[in-house]
Length: 162
Image (cartoon, rainbow, N blue to C red; front, side):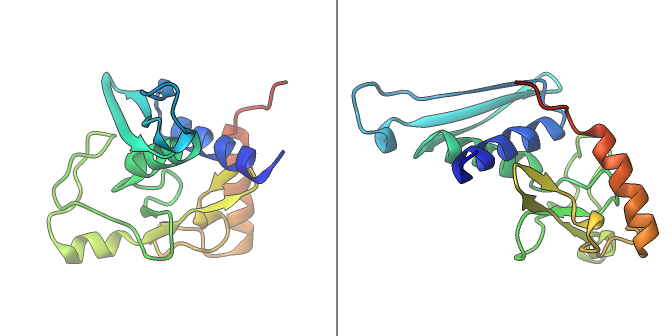
């Protein structure tokens, strides 16, 4: 598997991990260079279609969709705000979350949630709380707890098919 293939698989898995039920991607313009084709990606999530447009290729479209879906999300394992880079998580005060709850209203309450820095591991994004990279109060603090969490997390991974 090439690096681009691994990133593509990771983006698709990450989109699926959000609970999206349907994923589509494609381009708008024929007979132009790939970077000018107007790539888009969309996912159906709880009856709503969420999409990104005007990307430079299929991989950027799928990665942009994954980022859009996870912006403001909370890690299901440690409840911290999901961060996909060391720049930190993004949260919108009072915004509705996928589980029906709301993001806290104040910066202090949002900061108290902590952050979970997800990282790309081969063809899979993994929660930082599996690796001690979470500041969330509910994140496992010792190796044994992280090993238990990893076993639980691994049991939820889709099995590879060929």
